[in-house]
Length: 97
Image 1 (tube, rainbow, N blue to C red):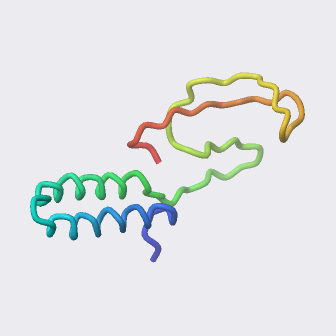
Image 2: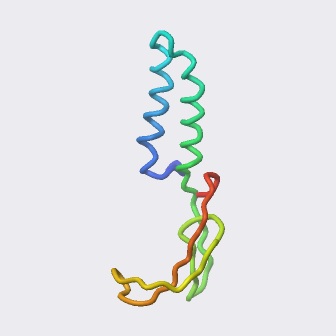
Image 3: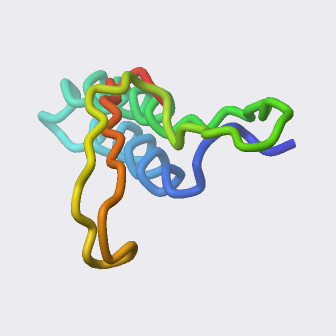
């Protein structure tokens, strides 16, 4: 069973957990334990990657992220489309995946 954490997040989560264990051993840095654990827990929630059920059907547009659509605009895109394209801007809070 794969844990629902994005592969890119394991390094950050591991570093913060290790720091939360080691840094308080340094004299005078015991206070840093709780902020480091808080950051580690936040990182677990930030890098979560839940399994998604894709709806059946053709010609569907699926969002690459959770969040709120804040803008849809026609833009010039010279690099990939070499012309007009539709830009959809999504605002993601730290609580979104």
